[in-house]
Amino acid sequence: MGNSVIARRLGLLAVLALCVVLLALVPYLPSYYVRVVDSILIYIILAVGLNLVVGYAGLLDLGFIAFYAVGAYAYALLASGQFDIHLPFIVILFIGAAAGAIAGVLLGFPVLKLRGDYLAIVTLSFGEIIRIAINNADDLTNGPQGIAGLDRASLFGLPLTTPVHFYWLLLVLAIIVCGGVYYMERSILGKAWRALREDQDVVRGLGINTTTLKLLAFALSAAIGGAGGVIFGAFQRFVSPESFTFQESLLVVLIIIIGGVGNIVGVIAGAVVLVVLPEVLHFAAQYRLLIYGVVLVTVIVLRPGGLVSPRFNLGFIIRKVRTLWLSPSKT
Amino acid sequence: MALALENVSKHFGSLVAIRNLSLSFDVGSIYSIIGPNGAGKSTVVNMIAGSYSVTSGTIRLGATALNQLPKHRIAQLGVSRTYQNLRLFDGMTVLENLEVCFFPQSWLTFLTGAKRLSKAERLEICHACLAEFHLSDVADVLAGDLPYGRQKILELARAFVTQAPIVLLDEPAAGLNHTETKDMAAMIAGLKREDRAIILVEHDMDMVMSISDRIDVLNYGELLCSGTPDLVRTNERVQEAYLGTTEELDDIRKLAQSRRAQGGLRANAGIVRH
Image: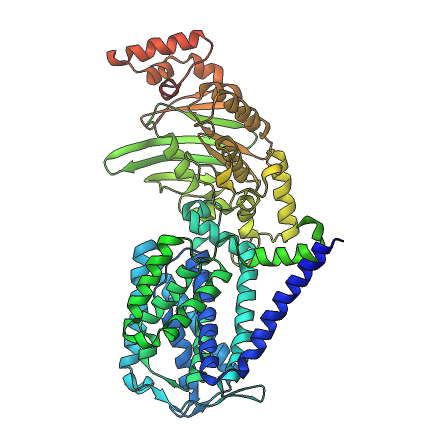
């Protein structure tokens, strides 16, 4: 074993240790920064979820935030004085995910015959319909005033109140979601999705029911969106329709496009960039959309595949680490 | 298992592409469907595979009527196909192109009723198939990066990997050079098996004549003639249909006759290409 191998292993260890230390240091940051990191993690969860549909199955869904709204309102209705129902957070987390999945299938059924632009337009409308419905269903949702005073969440007896608590929860959930989605990507299901993205007719000719395949993508992605929404509701302890505008759907899609379509590492990078950017440029808040536009155009012109190369994905990193550790002579 | 077309017609608006066609294909043989351009050959393939609906008539696989079923059900019942223009999953590796064919055997088997295959079993079958088609060395290469000839072979492999009893090959030799066409013909001939019917739509007459057990000749959507290669080769109506009877086709006829003298009857499209 040569010195260079040892050096590289040490380098690897150092990088890993640095990541762990950075993640462990977040709770000691001022509250504002913890909130920003929380926000990044939420958008990572959402974008990795939406990426199942957009990146893997190749279906452009512009109404994703509707599932997020379903989850958030699930928490608002089931853990507040609204109907005096107070279910535990963990139960609502699953209910929210299930409700999201059901909403995803309900959306999926009628629209899956559509492709490309048409699908995008219908899903965009779906997102708006959900928001407007929430806005108008006064008896159920309090309409535009929203629902305030949601229960303080707790998980297995641990309180979930401060941004730091949510940081740990979101971190764990983000890791679970990324790991799960990565597993799916590598499974034959992920391959079938990629094939679907390339040529839907041929996929049907292979004996694969493309409707089921697309519904699976919609349902899984919507379930992740729903779970994210529950956490959002518990975190804010207030929900109102204006949190779920088209702009939010757009942001999640932008994260994917700017980071790298179909690439988890890219999506994480995209979430960091697009969440941090408006914070850094707080003084120019009214130009937020303009800035997004400029960033998007710049990325598309300079790096059409997204900031992160499609080759630099989670699989690549894992392979690199594994070969360096197990058979370093190959590297 | 046999595939049968019973009085099948296909209309595209006012155009009658196939008129009252009845054909039967048994496992154990190689069949070729030939005919001039526009005769309806590809339409037949697309109807069997479920890409086109039939206007009237029935297509049966064994006792099952296929023409009421969605395309993916037809494939699950054992009809696989290749396409006139290559349609591989270019962004996926050669191995993955085969692996994805086993999706119905992996997820949601409770919905499809398919026999479940483990990942190891699936991979074993795919690797065996790659070896059979001499693609093992490129298993991890993206399908889109293969040279054209090997892409054609990969598409062939994809049609055979699931051991479908009915395999439809839509112009396997299209775009291949002379040597590659010969190799392709030998490969298809070698794939003939007792439990499999191979149905070929092809313009290359050398290939058709050399490997078919039966040739069905279509003209304007109707069956002109059906029989062994020797029978079809000598049939006057076939020659007429292929070469045309009007004066403007005389040149083509002469060219074809000189070709025949060289030892091979070629379809008009073949002449245009070579």
